Amino acid sequence: MRQAILITAYKDLSQLQRLVNYFNEDFEIFIHLDCHCQEDYTPFLQQTHINLYRRYPIEWGDYKHLLSIILLMREAYKHTDLQYFHLITGSDYPTMPLEKFKAYCEVHRNDNYLEHFPLPHRDWGNEGGLNRIQYWWLRPNSSRTKGAWLTRKLINLQRRLGIRRAFKYFNGNLYGGGTYWSLSRKAIGSVLDYIDKHPDYLSRFRHTSIAEEICLPTLLANSGLPLINDHKRYIDWGSDGANPQILTEKDYDKIVTTGAFFARKMESGRSEQLIKLLDLQ
Image (cartoon, rainbow, N blue to C red; front, side, top):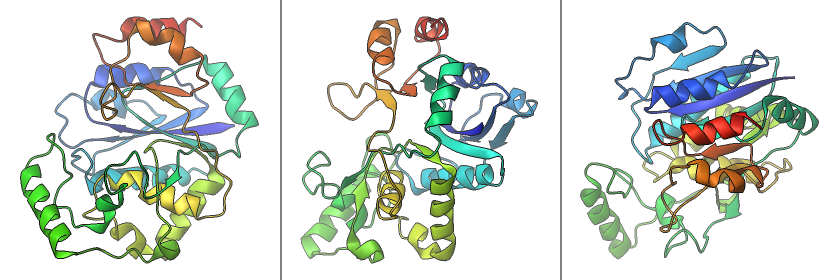
């Protein structure tokens, strides 16, 4: 069985190269590289199993990140021999030997691993995450984005005036979840088919904060397809619960006992020893 690896990448192309080197000819790799990246990406263009795109400039939590994911899904789905699809970041790394990973996915090729939960959700702030999609966002509310102070003022104004954006799809049944997943070909086809038939669904997520954590979980959770509420990713969210911590060899024992497909986040200069340990399994 051939599989698709979909990667959204921004920087640290040395780490990205280590990641793609893990996979063999049974995998086709699709990378969207942030247009802001100034590193030399030409080596990736010379590898026949890698398809690289630089269509969107990406900012944290911006709508264009969702568009880059949909782009990768479309391009991968065109390859009719690809039967299983994994979305990861350029700072991920597989947690198990390649042959074990391939064997597991072969058996579970019809399983859809996606974290999902109804909104509002208690862990998504005072409004349970509904603020992300009910208000108009100029930019995501984060110190990592320029002009976030203006967005916060605009959100507070909408809140005081009682302005709420309607969500007319799926009887208003909204779901949130993690951005990254492992899905069957049937699930990918279902997503693309719905978006093609309802193009306004995708555009509804424009001016939504971190739209990728709502758009696909909502669509798939309402699709009727069987979903396993597990994204199969190991992430240490740190003390604030909001920022993935850089993983090192100290995290090895925890990673290999979780059953996750991928661990995030790896960084050149800090995670090499961990990657060596994972490769030696």
